[in-house]
Length: 343
Image (cartoon, rainbow, N blue to C red; front, side, top):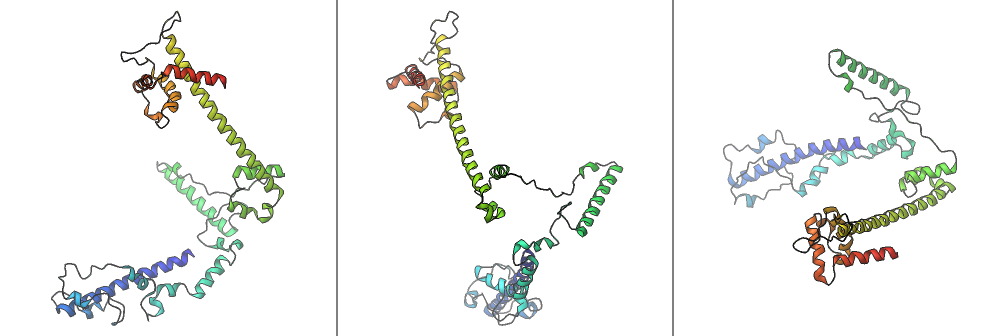
């Protein structure tokens, strides 16, 4: 099919040149009829030597309009419009078959020859006989004729690599090897087969079901694989939820530890420190401030993003601002600790 369309593409290229040439000829004829022959403008007879087509071909130039305008572009400056597409694809009405690309390429005999090459049913593997198919070495791969050609190719490749090394160049870069057929490992028991299906995710893939066949799709192995996949999905969902809870607990525990550090401060006697800056905001290290804000922010400003509080200064200002909302950050972190302990 690809080779057929390649031929069709080449025919369309020729047809495009032909349509463009006819547009030039019609434009020249229209200008000549509207303004008379001018010096330097080729005649229709001259253009006819390299333009293929009949004299009465359709004209896309309005002669009445042409007589009222001043031409600022070259007569050979041709552009194509959507209405030119049918002419390019399949020529003009009445054209012979060799000037109609579509009808010339997609004939009944040609299409039947494609089916004979590919095979009416693709699973007969006739398409593998195409010369563009690349073979692999080994059992089940290239036929004998192709394998001999592959061996010669690999031998020549290795000789070229050795020749490069002999003249002082880096021949090691030519280290490619022709791929060999890998024999698939087929599981023996149903348990191993079901695990293989689950691992490759074939249960819910249409393409996989086609390869496996309708019989196995209704067999015990496929049903067992589906049950195993459902259990695996449940386990993954539970593990994801547990990880989410653990991260939440870790965040809360980090905030409690940061609060305790702030209370004790740097005093060795363990007495209350609770250091504040000149604005009344708590003096906290960057990581401690972020840990506390990460827990309290969803309670007071759920629409705000934690990514906006990446610095110590903004975090401590936000904590200090809670005093204007009828509470303090100390009261709130204490309440979170009580809820966490009760849970």
